[in-house]
Length: 158
Image (cartoon, rainbow, N blue to C red; front, side):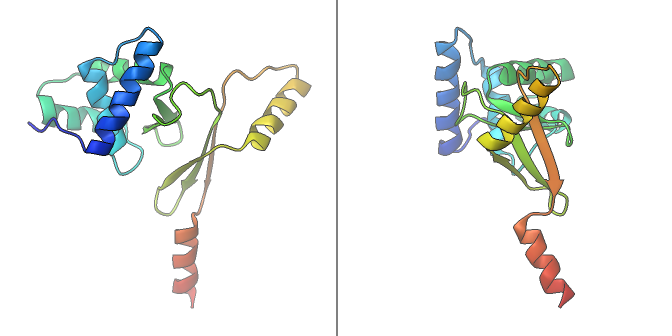
């Protein structure tokens, strides 16, 4: 039963715990482990993949346990949910920083890149305001092809 994470992930988990403590919340052992699994995943990871990995590490675990941990992590701004992929991605570096989540999702390799474009967020706010709507939080997911996949396609076409 492996419970250790990389030094980089442990440092991120310590920052996440400090963030939670500053906001009167607690990063329990289970929440910490779920966040660690997300941070060490090679890409966005789904709840059932997390459940399987959690079971490998600690034995019995039930779906509601993982979903409650994910809800907490989202509420604390430590993870984002990618609706298009039904998966989660860590956001510990910006924990508590209110920012619009903007993601570029490659349809070729499934790589996800988070961007933060103030002009895009402002354009959405303006368009919403013109309709009498005030945006509280927005997650924008754009699907396309990343530079690496475009390059591979270009080389294959030659």
